[in-house]
Length: 430
Image 1 (cartoon, one colour):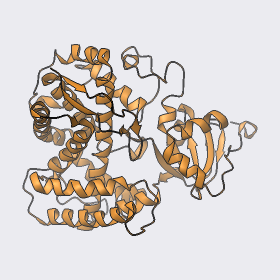
Image 2 (cartoon, one colour):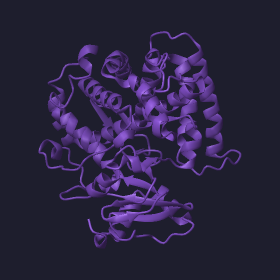
Image 3 (spheres, one colour):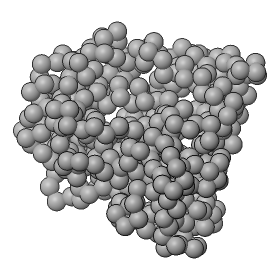
Image 4 (cartoon, one colour):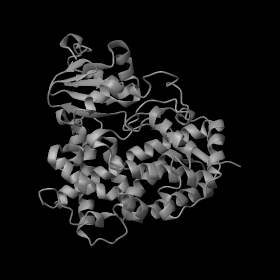
């Protein structure tokens, strides 16, 4: 590439970024409207932080093809609430070494171990819905299910211990993407207190003998590449990150999937034609593969389309360690770059502004979907999340006929991840 082809970085000319921040948190089309005006790469300011937004195959590929020139980055609120030991806040060798140890929790054999517990949780929810005397908020139940899977399979918690952890976790999660000012009574201040309680509970769990019910034994004695074992504080913050990563994104994906199915009877019928050919429950040995794309192509297409249309994370961040060229535009050193997934997933040829799962069966979607991030920092819990989603959809729809309650708000709130505003209240169809 010759230097004459390079273009300067377009900018919104925002200075303080106060109004940009308000728009960023309130407007789901924040990035798209600016891409339409400025192109696939532009810079703005969010509360004084220079930030570059990118969309499109070329800009994203350019970014991810230079891993040595970028590092992980999160907003200050996330950094404080996750902690300095967290994988999310580490870079370089310290990140890679700990990632290899934590990855053991999500190996194929570990997922097989977790399958029976996930199936039991799906059956428990099915029974609760079946016997409920009044409509239940399905989105809320998806959140509790996703948290229970992590708390049970990883930590081996059950009953009241799990419920206590969940209450503090909800407080902590809601402030992850907030203004990091701990004014008394503010969501961020409450989240910091909840974080302290969560870490105390996790430390207590780690101090007890491993009971074999969860996956913590997979981490026992884990060493980094320098031969230094995880400290309890270090491991506690990794577990806190895993609880969030395996909970919020999975709950969002499930809630959005259920919303699409239950609001479109033709789509539900289309999926049920496949589901009715599948057995439930699978054995733990079968669970990780029996509903895979080869055996359940319609379910796979539906999951892909949910992840494309309403990705559980609107984007992921990197910070440049030197000047880069992204889609022929020069991005300076020490710039935060956000890969804008929502906008990028609708950027291209075809009817990408419409929800249509069949496009993935017909091979009409050439987009590279990255709902769990990409590159060296792709989400470790990706395989577990996909397993949970498949088991939940098959388990519920093989046993139940659900219908939504009318006159509720079906639009999606976006922070911390997409979810139906009124909770997606449902009842058994009679």
